[in-house]
Length: 418
Image 1 (cartoon, rainbow, N blue to C red):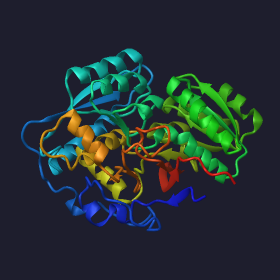
Image 2 (cartoon, one colour):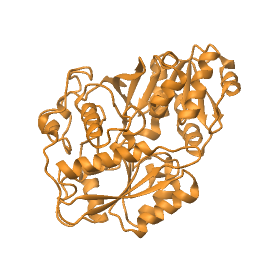
Image 3 (cartoon, rainbow, N blue to C red):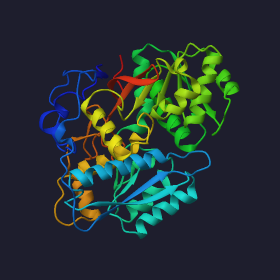
Image 4 (spheres, rainbow, N blue to C red):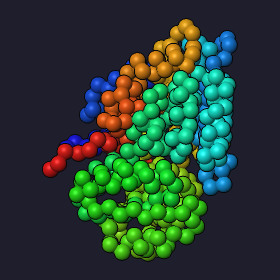
C-alpha cells in the first residue's frame, strides 16, 4: 500500500535552487527515494539574503487563540510574527512591500472568535492567518464572506476545509485518518481515543476518525475528557476495559499530560498516538520522558530533525523569536504565515484580497514550511470532499529522549482494502 515513506526534506524538493531561496514556491519534488531526514543538512548561508521590503505596508490579519481560560498559545503568534519578520527582511515581503500584521487574540470561545473575524473585515486586511482554533466554523464564513482569504496550516474543523475562499496548507483535520492507516499497518484490532471535550475534537473524531478506523477493520471507542482535567484516571480506566492495542490522545497540554500519566499509572500496554499538541515541552516535563518514550506523533511539521526545512525553522525562530520554544505547537503559526508568503511569492503589482486569493489558487507545489518535503497546491483536488485542503500528507514522528525524531511521511487518504 506504500502509505509510509521515508522523510523527504533532505531531498531535491528542498535542495538546490529551492533550498537557497528559503521562501521557495513552485519547487516540485523529484525523487521519493532520496535520503531520509536523518541526513546531515544545514541552513545555507543565503537563506538570509537581507533583501528588505520597502514602501507602503500590506496589512495581513493574524488571529491566535490566546488569553482564554483553558487554552492559550501565545507561542503560535510569536512564531507567525517571526516568519513575517523573516520575509520582510529577506524576501521583500509581499510584492516588494513590508507585511504589517494586524493581530487579534481570540479567547477560544464563540464571542471573541466572532469579534476577531469582524475586526479583520473592518480593518480591510488582505488575508487572514489563523494559527490554530476550534472556532473556524464561526470565523471562516465571516472572513471569506467579505472576500478575504482565510488561511491556516491546520484546520480545526470541517468548515474550513469546505469553505470557498479558505485555504488549509496541511491535512491536519485528517490526523485520525493518518492514525487509522498507521494502526492498520501495525495490525491493531482495537483503539481507544481520549479527546478533549470540545466540539472541534469530538466532532472530528466522530465524523472522520470513527469511520476511518472502522473501514480499516479496527474497533474504535471515543472517551471525552473535560477541558482542564488534572486527573483523568477514571476516564482512562474506563477506556482500557477492552484492553485496546492503541490509545489516541487529543487535547491541549493539561489534558494530554493527565491522560498520558494515567495510562502509565494504570499499566496500559496500548501504543500511544497523538497530534503535535501532546508533544509540547510542558507535556514531556509534566508526564515525564519515560511516559512519552516511543509515543507516535502525527503532525504537519518536523521541528527537530537536521533536514533543511526543519533547520530553517529553528534558525528563523532563533533570530526572530529566541525566547519561544520550537518543539511545541508554535510551528503552526510559522507554517500558516510562511505558507501564505510562499504561496504569493510570485505576486507583483497591486496587492489586494483578490490578487492574494488568485495567487494562492495559481501556485503549485509550494513547499510546506517545516514540512519534511511535503508540498501543497490549492486547486481543490488534494482531498475529496474538502476542496479547501491543499495537501493529503502529514508527518509521523517518534518521541525519543523527550524529543521528536525519525520523521516519516504518511498519507491521509483512505487505504485500499486488502
